[in-house]
Length: 62
Image (tube, rainbow, N blue to C red; front, side, top):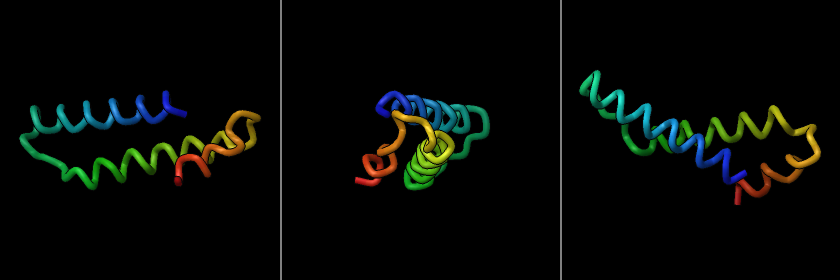
């Protein structure tokens, strides 16, 4: 689970950095956090039938 959260965070921060460098536009931190949260929820939902992902949504929502 922590790997998923770390990978998603790095990806979205890198995307924000590139957007700032190439487009000179900044996305609010709340929007970046919402994108990370939504991506993690989608990953957990897609893997909900696997053995190790049974309780991940509960852990993520804590």
